[in-house]
Image (cartoon, rainbow, N blue to C red; front, side):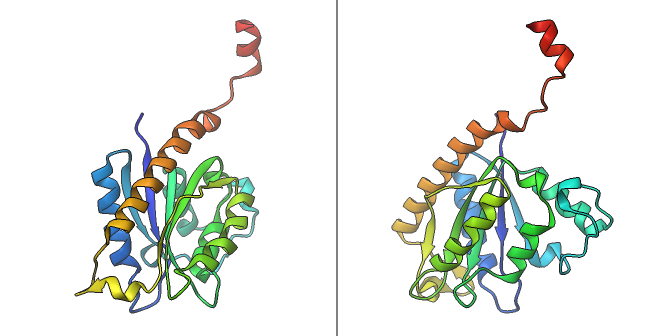
Length: 199
């Protein structure tokens, strides 16, 4: 079964380190081999503050940026959000991106690689999880948490310790398990007449 993992960089500000951490995790995921890895940078996606006139449940999108984002989200079987903590909460870019679409998120697992100071971004993760469950995403418990992340940055690269690699391995394994289990839930339902004929 071919499964796609979107590794989403959730910070968009100049000077961010999110892309370096996302690059490390994406490389780690490729080496693991369970997913086809799709890097996604919200800075490149460039979504404006939510501007669709119709509810995302309808999937009647008016703007090209929404249609592009819908295709990215819809094409993934699982997600990892590489996310810092802003004022003990998630980045505005991440919350905005999550709210843009709805059905495209449904019945897929999600995990976090969070980074920050003493908390390692955990407060932002905890505040984001209720949004994920409202979108029918399944947040997994396993995670990569990076407190004092600057200690692991050298020459613009993130240098992982064994504990980070172990955490990444556990996160990827759990995401894969859930991605396999949830994929049948997203299959188109059989037409009633087909079910009756087979019944």
